[in-house]
Length: 255
Image 1 (cartoon, rainbow, N blue to C red):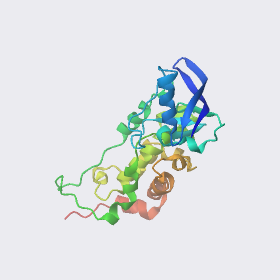
Image 2 (cartoon, one colour):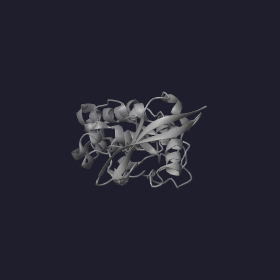
Image 3 (cartoon, rainbow, N blue to C red):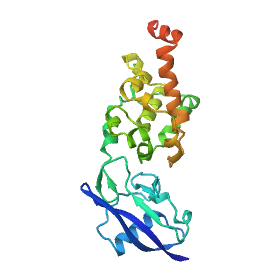
Image 4 (spheres, one colour):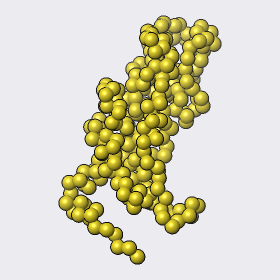
């Protein structure tokens, strides 16, 4: 079946813009990105939109559909009523470049600030050995496609621009948690305590675990429960638990 849908699409650039109304054909099985492409092909050839795989695996087509951060390629038109107005706007947390394309370089800047995996000393690359049970907790976080929807919906940066300098956001705090849980990461041997760094350098304390990041993750990663809360617990234990603090001060016996 085919019906005509009413779309409101944000058009503009760094100097400002507003919502424009369009009537566009919708076919069974289509997603919002299909409709945006049809608008480009039939009515607004200069409409700017970022996309790549159209399979929910590249994270490029992130936008806000009826106010909710979503991947346009994974948002089926069937979830809307035929007479419902569908509003598509750019990610609110990041500066607009043009139309639906935003400048997400903030996220790449934060990624560079997270210290990389530190290989264990004396173990050549290619000879790392881990049991599956040791990596199950952090393996979930590897599903991240870096759509930055969690970054967009996190109110710490969405509603408080001033926090961006000191808060990494859920995606990169999850990255720190992944490394902190990695059975072979040897950062502590070089004096880097990742949980403490998350708290002191990346703004972990700003997170008040509202779980909004978890709710909109297209990969269904339990960001809050499995990454952020455990990371908070490790940071607090190290700082306030006297036994943990004492243990951290005792040097490991050298063989």
